[in-house]
Image 1 (cartoon, one colour):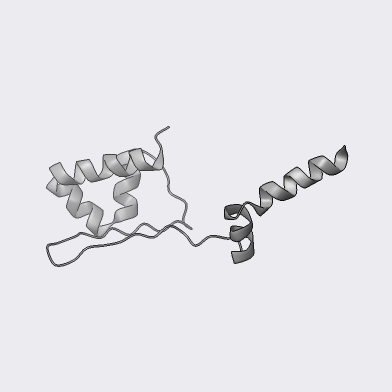
Image 2 (cartoon, rainbow, N blue to C red):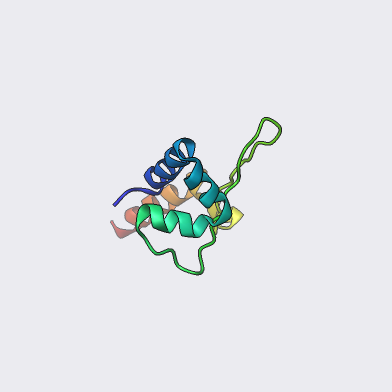
Length: 92
């Protein structure tokens, strides 16, 4: 199975070379992707296609983290590692 990035690349490459597919992708993104990849996309997943132009650029952000700010600081600040080491030392 292709990775999500490989699937995106396949869709974009096809849209760059096939004007009919590009129009379908803009009109019915989910239907065009399902047909191209031979998959069924769950109803809960929305697909939005944006066409960039010389005047418009799109920036796609990843989903917001489900970790709290404290969790993120613990991981990035090394506290998680320190806690794990302390637990190991306590076992001795």
